[in-house]
Every structure is written in structure tokens, then in C-alpha cells.
Image (tube, rainbow, N blue to C red; front, top):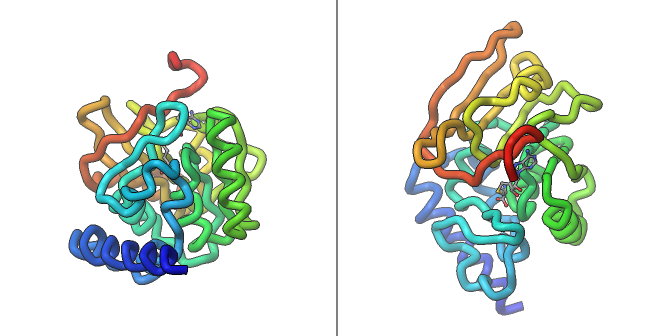
Length: 216
Ligand code: SAH
């Protein structure tokens, strides 16, 4: 019980110091970040860093994104609870949980089966029944359930995979980090009457999006 309270307090100070101070203001995003226990998505040995202002290592050489980046990406998607979201890069499943708090349905694709399995266990334990996890190559999207009102890519690519733009609904929003390893920029695309309008958000650093044609 006591540790639950400590985690709540740690989340509250994360909200104030890391998110609100840097301009995150969407009440729904802040409430979701207050609710979701980030400590459940990382190794027990890293528990003390659960609410630190940084990305952390997870299995398969991947990372759980920095809380601020999770909040910024989520806020940029302008979720109101009604949308279906496609996420590429489940990783730990933490971002998936935040999306699940704010969306009608989340479909999340991960290329590492081991990460997908672990994320699935935690997401089920936390009761997110409107989340579906898929193992596969997210650069191809998930055509069978397209179009999606929102798409979030949580790994960095040189270019946005064309399949994702095709599978985005009209008036939909897609967020993706683009650029080479050191020079990534978080980009937001809004699709209007079939045309993509791009907007640069902030510089960032994500692990690479590895598609079928890339080297592992
Ligand atoms: N949102 C996650 C971020 C994980 S890092 C979190 O905060 O925990 C990005 C993830 O994208 C990694 O788990 C990596 O394996 C996955 N990934 C990279 N390329 C992919 C692809 N083509 N399809 C699906 N997942 C991919």
C-alpha cells in the first residue's frame, strides 16, 4: 500500500516537473500519465528510475521512451476518446497503455515477439481490453483494419513508410520521428482531403524503425 502511494507521489511530481513545466497542458494526457504505473513496464532492477526524466533500457536492446516524449506524442495526437489508434513499436507497452486510456481501440505492432508477449501480460493485468498486440513489421501498417484515425510510430525512420500514410483516415493525425540517428525530428502529419500536411515538433532520439528491407 505504501509503495503504491509513493508511486502516485512520484507520478505527481513527474507531471509537474517534467510535463507541465515543459508545456504539456492537455488535461486528459496528464490524467492518463497520473494513472498508468510506469514501474510495471520496466525491469524490477530499474524500479527506482521509473519516474526519472529519461528513457530506460528494456529487453531486446530497445528502450521505453522518456515520459515527456510519451506525453508530447500523445498530446500531439489530439485524442478525445473516440479514435482508433495504430501504434508501431509496442516496446514495453507503456505508451500503449497511455493511448488505451484515451482511445476507443489501440492496435500495436512490435517486431520482437518477446517484447510483445511481456507487454501483453502487463496490459492484460492492468485491464486494457480494447488493446490488440500484433507481432510483425509495422512499416507495412496493418491493412486489414485500416483506416486509422491516429497512427503513432515510436521508432525513428529516414522516411515515413508510405503504407502508414495510406492507412491513415482523412483528417487523421500521424506522429513519427524522422531523420538520421543523431538528427531526428518528431514530425506530425495531418491528412486533409487526401493530402499530407507536415509539421515539425521537436528534435528527439529514438531507436531505429527496422523494416523488412533493413538490416537487423
Ligand atoms: N513505445 C515504446 C518504445 C519502444 S522503442 C516504449 O515506450 O516502450 C521502439 C520499438 O519499436 C522497439 O521495441 C522496436 O523493437 C520496435 N520496432 C522497430 N522497428 C519496428 C517495426 N518495423 N515494426 C514493429 N516494431 C518495430
